[in-house]
Amino acid sequence: MTVLPPKSLSIARLAVYCVNETHDGPDARAMGTHDGPEAKRAPAGHSPTSDIFHPFRQLEPLTMILARRSLLRFGLATILAVGLQLAVVDRVATPAGAAEANQDHAAVTPVPRDGKGWQERHATINERLKQTDTQLVFIGDSITQGWEGRGKDAWAKFYGPRKAVNMGIGGDRTQHVLWRLDHGNFDLVKPKLAVVMIGTNNSNGKDNTAEEIGDGIVAIAKRLRTKQPQMKVLILATFPRGEKPNAQREKNAKSSEIASKLADGEMIHYLDIGAKFLEADGTLSREIMPDLLHLNEKSYTIWAEAIEGKVKELLGE
Image (tube, rainbow, N blue to C red; front, side, top):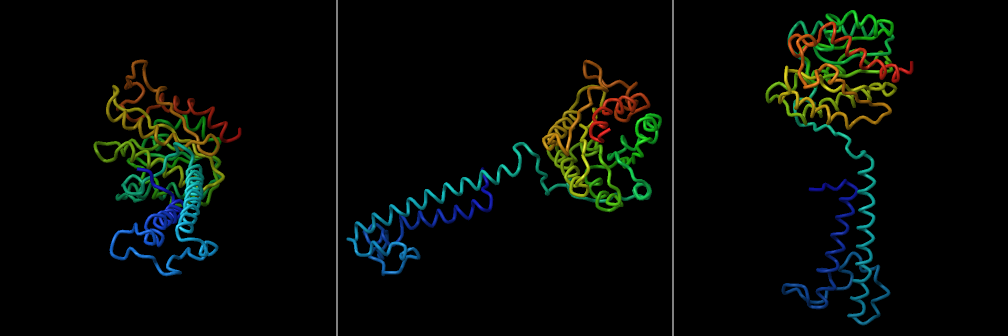
């Protein structure tokens, strides 16, 4: 079902008025075509539009009625044409295919997490942001946080010189990232680029659908752009998980595809490097991800190398 924008609804209401004037207005009663016992000529001035047709009052009743209807039909056609133009303008304002977050589910509703560990990690990130003039931030869950563990050597090589800040927290979902962006010191820094990889925790079981996860990723990217207008955002497709292709992989792939539609090639970019971790037949090796989800030294290097060209481009290096 097509939903008209507010402006078009107003036009539509006016059009309905014209239709009523044409078919059931005073003229219909004058011609005896109006149903009901009141089918008689309406008194002068009954219609709100009667003054418009003052020149026709001296004409014969039938001639006046036909003239009135002709003008009403012309007015109706004009109103509908303007309404269609407004509808087109409103639709162009949102590019075709651009994802819009639905605000009615958990993945887009900012919430914090319980637990001392999470609160401490959140506080640590805030302190890092206050103490640096970073140009690059990484936002995500345990896979992102892992840059400080098995990925520390690759991080030091690729991101140490850039004073990058790791904003990953293990176990986070899209809704937790949204909350963190609104309850920290992110506004105190002015990065040039944010790399976002999030969503795999939302995909567990029936917690969220692919569409909802996509909404969550889109909401994060939009929040980042609102808070940091100068900053570009690089959305990474959620990394593959599980040894063989499976339903959860498919859900994450679909949510990533939904989020990819937000990319405009200017301030928001999208990159899918998932194939870099897989064998030709789609198998995910434990040599790459030991638990078939989290990365090791080798796979963090793969990640860094796979996005380095794009990172350099977006940082203007």
